[in-house]
Length: 228
Image 1 (cartoon, helix red, strand yellow):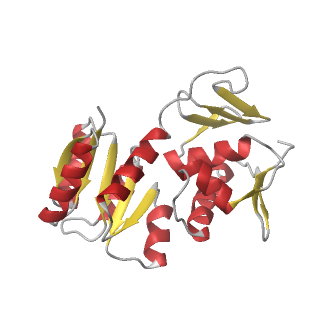
Image 2 (cartoon, rainbow, N blue to C red):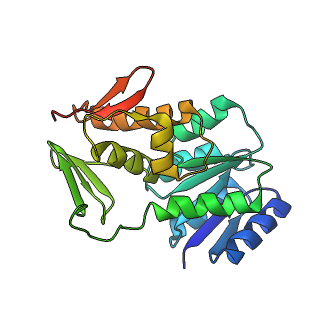
């Protein structure tokens, strides 16, 4: 059973999230502020964090930075602030998803399940082996590991899903909506800037290794270069 760390300084909201997630089959650990959240993350045994942004004792953005310096553990931000700048900043820091308050319990449960589902290895099949390669790029579906020229590229769950989608068909242009469906699942309302933020982070991480395999096709979307 997956364990979800719920972080919010509002006790009522924590109660709602705890009840919703427990009804959905998850174990729930709670924290009321950023300092407590990071301590419980470091204690281990957490599979995903649902993280409020505005909190005392280290806000959610700072918690995300600190977690990302140590782990690729999935993070879903929840916030009453629906400013696009906040949303993009959260994703730039490495969050996998962003949910705006007030949200329905059903939506919270769906987002948590969608992110965790992307961590589950797919069954081995002849047409989709566990190791996907193109030139210097290699992605291991079972170990959730990406490498370029044997150097590991540390990707979040969502970044991994997006790059894997592009790797499935090098040279093919994927629209942002197609990438949302593949990475988030059908039914998610994700802005184009959200996809752009994830792609930009992937490019930065690959660029640190001298790689530039993703092309922007203006007005259409993104594609993986055929010649890697």
